[in-house]
Length: 194
Image 1 (tube, rainbow, N blue to C red):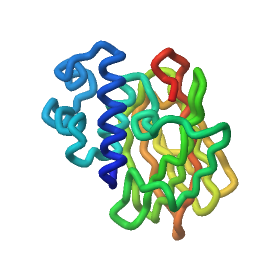
Image 2: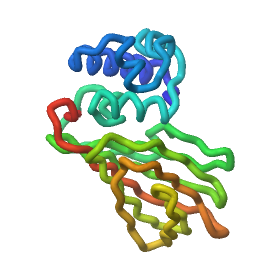
Image 3: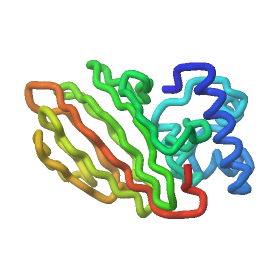
């Protein structure tokens, strides 16, 4: 969730600018993204509090990264981001969380996420646009990755990759907290620069 007024203003500006660049009306963006027109109007006025699923649907529809919706203009050649300086975009019912650390720039951006999943906690994701590839690298604990209905166990020290255009779920499994780094590789395209 977008937690500060300044962050909400940035998201509002970026959604409006991306929608205008794509030549979409509010009605058409609403239809394509399956986000209500009322929610879009509020978001573009820097009101409301969009959740991660809403931001992902808008980013996929607009052909940009989630962080392109959330970041202001670039600030220098090197960016160093501390995890505690980034608000979680998802918080689980048992204390898990997901933080979008940064997105690389260029014709095929990559989002870098830090996730923490408590045992039994899960996050279901809808399919992304064609060409999105995700990787999950478990640094502690164990997770169950469910892609298109098939479960895969990924333990600490292992990395899995999959096409993100299928339904997928991340679930903490085992007896301890699962920590992982996820990358989302976005397809190249003129609208996907950050």
